[in-house]
Length: 174
Image 1: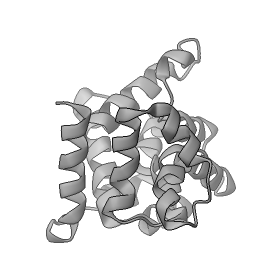
Image 2 (image 1 turned 135 degrees about the vertical axis):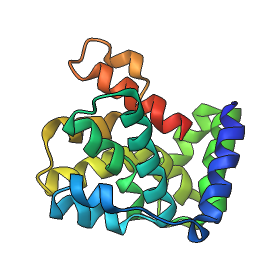
Image 3 (image 1 turned 45 degrees about the vertical axis):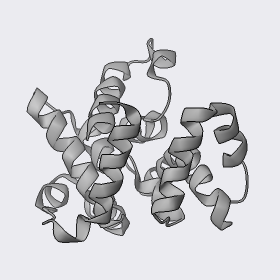
Image 4 (image 1 turned 180 degrees about the vertical axis):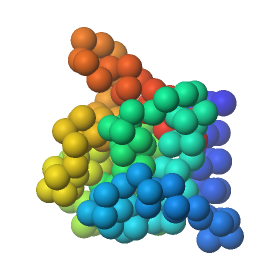
């Protein structure tokens, strides 16, 4: 599935998230109370996506705690600046046309309507990692959240590389 088709499917799923049941029991069991509170602040569609990412990882076999926490909270940084469907879609389109323009636009004020989506798209991993640090999350989970949108090849020598790769594949397909 092309990236554009995947994002279209993801956008449609977000629009109709209200109509689907949300099973938060797994998240509640896995996450300590302080991290579960962060999970609860995420949009319903992001919670659904995060649970789907975790389920995809579980279908492959054993999921270490850090990877499970990262699966459930990898997009928590998006709660800093709520976005609508247009703000969520524009960065994906711009990235496909010009990754350089995406980076440039992401460095602008996230409080402005037109640039919010770009800032969130690029910065949410760092914002989420900071939230997890403040909540005393395990260091490995923080690292996975912080780097889940990176080019994983740049981390080939890192001890969490295989977990990062698994998280990215599950995130990109669910």
